[in-house]
Image (cartoon, rainbow, N blue to C red; front, side, top):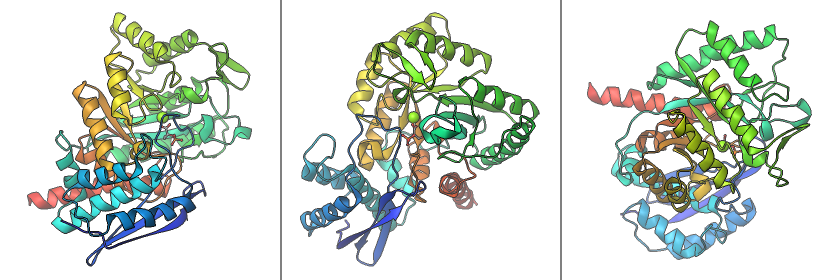
Length: 407
Ligand code: 2PG
Ligand code: MG
């Protein structure tokens, strides 16, 4: 039963150069660390992070309250944080402060018990562990690209190898990138990158990203599916029900028509955040339409809609507004609440995709999480960027350690 003797935090820069926190905790001679990412297309119902300077002050306050306390498992530690914060969205302590501590604590438990982190996480989860499929964002658009580069309207064009084996899957993503480069060169597009390391393609037609991926798929040796994250909350103008991008605009029915068209044409596996986070009726209508047309094997993925919040997932599932979910620890602010949200989604028969944020650090926690809770997917950007690659490599490390155990 670990007691935490000290915690210290420092301000570091994330992959976008913005400030975030890295926290270390100490118990006896064991030290563990964690750092926290941050999003740009944040859902408005996400838990609230504190300014980094404030987060460090809060750390001292939490440590004073934790002194002499014993915590037997992640949930006990997280419950202590929740109680001390006392708000539904962590606005007192900051969801970044609580998440950093919660991840440090999970790592501490793992070290103390001398078992891998994913096993500690699996103990909290109702699911068996398994390797997720990789969701690699290879063409970036929307808010993740400098506006002057005239990016595509949808935020992410994802390449999803069919293999579950992380090694094979990562190799497939890298070879796809090689082919994609040559297609982009042949189209006269220069090498420019967005926040998650994906290529930038300029244009207003949302289909263009998929057209290019599809052209690549024809010369690529390997089986891959595609998905998109429309991140429609950031397109929603709030006026007359119109989603806007530069000179283009669509109402929800026009968007739904585009989604159905591209889903069929490119055999899409998933569409994330097709509509605004507060327009649940649009989601419900889209799902109904898919069912009527017997196209309900498309993953309709909630991210801003559900924000890793068990209550919002339950509401969306009961209303039949989606059938899959993005799980991001920093949307919620503790490890055990994150796992509970994923478990609940699975109980409703939903697919679960663990995800990074657009502003990342080199912390690879989400890889252990994805494997530990048996997620269907891990979305971690383009492996051309180091802070994304570490997540994919951690999955391979887990696979190797399991193979060694078997021998
Ligand atoms: C998303 C994420 C991560 P952000 O919308 O799914 O890709 O973006 O971290 O900016 O919210
Ligand atoms: Mg998203």
